[in-house]
Image 1 (cartoon, rainbow, N blue to C red):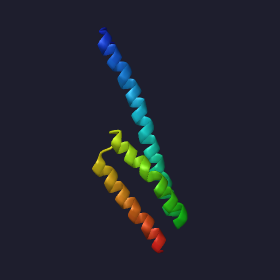
Image 2 (image 1 turned 135 degrees about the horizontal axis):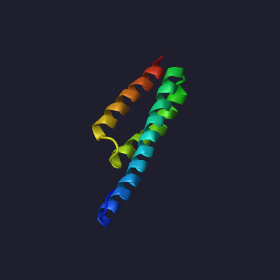
Image 3 (image 1 turned 90 degrees about the vertical axis):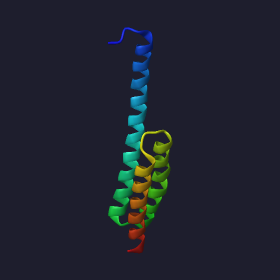
Image 4 (image 1 turned 45 degrees about the vertical axis):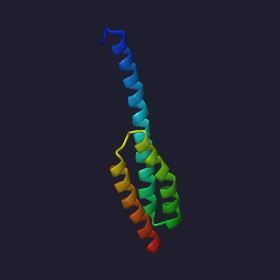
Length: 89
């Protein structure tokens, strides 16, 4: 355990930041799961709505530094293609 006051403060900050980032990542994974479930169900309206709702959540993770920009861009591109494929069918 840290004895220095500044080190104790850094530990408290890290615990808070970790919890916050974990919650953000969990929201992102939930949004992705909802999109994938809507695509799997074959309902194009639900898939489109889930994609529109999930997109800002993924972008927010980038601005907060939880996920890398290229990773989110790639994920959104692939999800978008899957949503469009459902609409074409």
